Length: 545
View 1 (cartoon, rainbow, N blue to C red):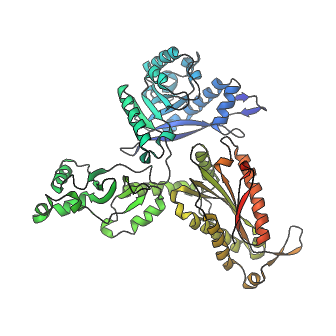
View 2 (tube, rainbow, N blue to C red; view 1 turned 180 degrees about the horizontal axis):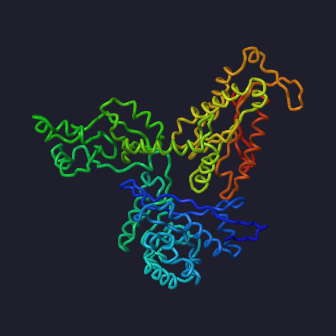
View 3 (cartoon, helix red, strand yellow; view 1 turned 135 degrees about the horizontal axis):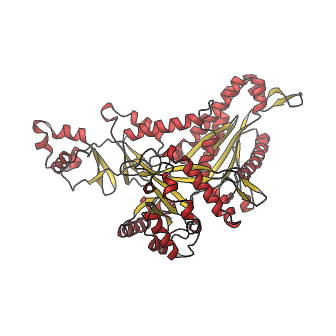
């Protein structure tokens, strides 16, 4: 099937289907998948694709194509009858007279999936035109076994009237409401109210959010105990009667003060005198004081290193995770860390650049798309080497590869303090891209430029370095003197991009900035960076003094 969108004749022969997991936070298991559709070039963005279809009156055809694409891959993805499948449907399409015949229990079960596994997720893109019809259509679909979900309650057109009309099985909360909820009491109150509301209508809450490579996606709330509120004897009986109790955290208010693990606690309470010695003392007395605690933005790679550096008797202890104020957020077990590390390594190995070991184009595009879909600020940094071709031609490929590895190392070291807030990739050749969420620390780029200029010296012959140039041949075959290689950085912040900017336009902006950065490095002979400011009427840059 194909959809013709007559906007400068954009022809989309097919859509691609991707799926994101729905995770049960209590067990850490994937409970289901939301199936999402993406366009093909030149209309890859889902928002742009559906907006155009809506303007041109072809939304029904496009969504039918998306549903068909989803059904084609269901059996390959859903490996258990316990898994749920979320399929997005726009309200106008759901209410269309053609929908019951196009999507029903027979159509789904023909693909090997039971209707009770399928959740029809009503999106917030449109206002509902007929709530009475909506209520009847929902009942019709439920009678066939389908489940119903409301997407992004409180955002867009998903309001309380829709909730009352549908009585959905699942209510999805918008990502903006969930992000940083542990630090914002108002969001906590709102979500608490929505959870209560959901329980009244027998719905389940699903919180939307990212699953970063950091710790937030893995953190679980272990048993927390205030330091003076429970005795060792009380905990001993709890532990004996609760086999699944593995560890707990002792708190002073919201601050972690100790870690209690089953094995360590049992060894202290056992023996001839252990129980009598500890039974009436507060649990803090038997807790480990030298436990490992990390911030929630700590990367998995860095956490693995810290965990393995612990003493042998603590090497497999859980890790306590805290927020920016040092308040307790939860714990991560080493089993989780090892599993996630392996998952990340496999994913990156499939796409990484063999020279630098950094992720390649696929991962970089995924990072950028993810950041564009969020409300938080982010910064794109494009880096490449000036006069690298001449260096490669003169010094040879082995030295050239070494210089590229140096660049990767300098960038990794320079961004290391940002932890999981930075994703660094290698486009190819001497081109690198960093995607930084949140604000970029002042002086970070200056430090990177200085460090590159310091460490590059080892890659030049002493006589070339002393005279400030090396001899090469230009594109015309003429001998020329070439200054040492420098690093140019082009910096683009989210506010300068616009929400719907096309990737090709981003590349155009980056190319323009890199040209300006190269002009500056040519003039000074030092590495430097230029930042996009044209939305504010000027261009600002930074050079290393």
